[in-house]
Image 1: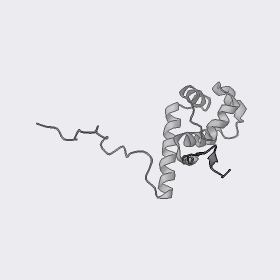
Image 2 (image 1 turned 90 degrees about the horizontal axis):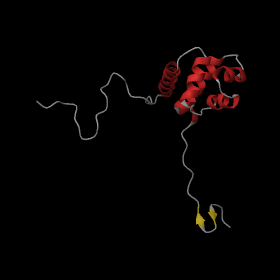
Image 3 (image 1 turned 30 degrees about the horizontal axis):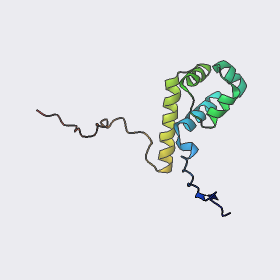
Amino acid sequence: MRPGIVRGVERQPRRQRTPPRATLGAAIGRVVRRRRGDVPQQELGDRAGTTVVNVSRIEHGQTPRLGVLEGMARALGTRPSTLLREAEDLQVQEAKEKGAEPPWPDETSPPDTPAGESNERSV
């Protein structure tokens, strides 16, 4: 049998995965790892009310559920919004270092308008 053929059916090409460093989950993981410092994953998991497996998954780029993110933030002595903001800032910084567009829109520009609407008001 030829490679790529299974019982007469050709396999679909594999989906291209987003590089791990480009996702928000990966950025959250790097922020958690940096803030954790020398605290063992087991201890952080205990403080956060989750398992060492979850801590490891987060640090390796899996996006945490909201409850886990809240527990991690509490265990790290901060707020979930702070962890998210630091992760977003990290993504923007990394994009700039690569000469790429930041993954988030510039907050000083006007928000996107729904399709079919304009930014101008009619009088």
